[in-house]
Amino acid sequence: MEKKKEIVMSGIRPTGFLHLGNYFGAIRNYIKMQDAYECYFMVADLHSLTTHPDTKELKQNVERVLAENIACGLDPEKAALYCQSHLPETSELYLYLNMLAYKGELEKTTTFKDKVRQHPENVNAGLLTYPVLMATDILIHRASYVPVGKDQEQHLEMARNFAQRFNHRYGNIFPEPAAFNFGENLVKVPSLDGSGKMSKSENGMSTLFLADEDDMIRKKVMKAKTDSGPTEPNSPKPEYIENIFGLMQLVSTPDVIAKFDEDYNNCNIRYGDFKKQLAEDMVKFISPIREKINNILPDKKYLKNVMEMGAEKGIKSTNATMKLVREAMGLKYY
Ligand code: ADP
Image (cartoon, rainbow, N blue to C red; front, side, top):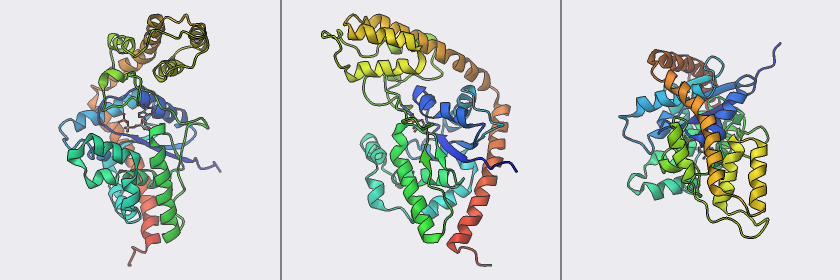
């Protein structure tokens, strides 16, 4: 008999254009995992409501995230690629898990504190319980692995805690899910302004989007922060220079990186040339993806079909889990 594949789950919010951080933190692994694992990848439309209550652009953004995932190489015939709101039992498990999550621990979450700072006018309960919904998305498929970037590490730890609490109280239903990057450290793609991470919702000029035109990519890379260069051989690199080398690691060849590293250590690096090289390597990497996005996006019939196919696979999995959950909880009276 064929061995049952291990289960993988991850998601991306439809809050804007996907960027290099989403690609290297998440999507690259989705693609590497789609053959060997049973994969559930979702467009996290419910999550986006916590910070983006205006839904005027939601449909368009959902279609974009789907098209962008597929353009990167995700195959909707292999993985289940679906919309979070198309799996109705998500809301049910979210309710049960909320009873096992404590206000104190939710308030201490780093992303919650960040979002309170960014949107003091909209500190809603959904924002507070974001980690519970995220745990629900994973646990409802009884997934073991979650390919995500470094920014999600704390949420994963909370998902494990909620799984443990449920199992302890009601019986062993959920595996404890782990963040996954093929045994490597989780990725953080830095922003081009020298601090923080690339993100959909912050400073567009410091983030390289998969849909960016070639000239826009060049413009953004050339604006990345540098200085007048090192004066002592082999000096440590400031964070903003380290970040540019980090971006080069993602798209340039090892000999190119080695050359600029040597130039840096010998104090004769020319930052103009360094950034030009990075810009061209980024263009080479991003432009074929952009072209595929532009081909897929207008095909609304295909995207609808992808969503339907994904929902069907997703619902089959959530039905099976929720049957076990209700039984374990004693919510079955006849
Ligand atoms: P964003 O922060 O851009 O809104 P999401 O919260 O939707 O992105 O995250 C989608 C996935 O992309 C998650 O797995 C997250 O860890 C990953 N991700 C987002 N930004 C980065 C980044 N700069 N570096 C690495 N991974 C990232």
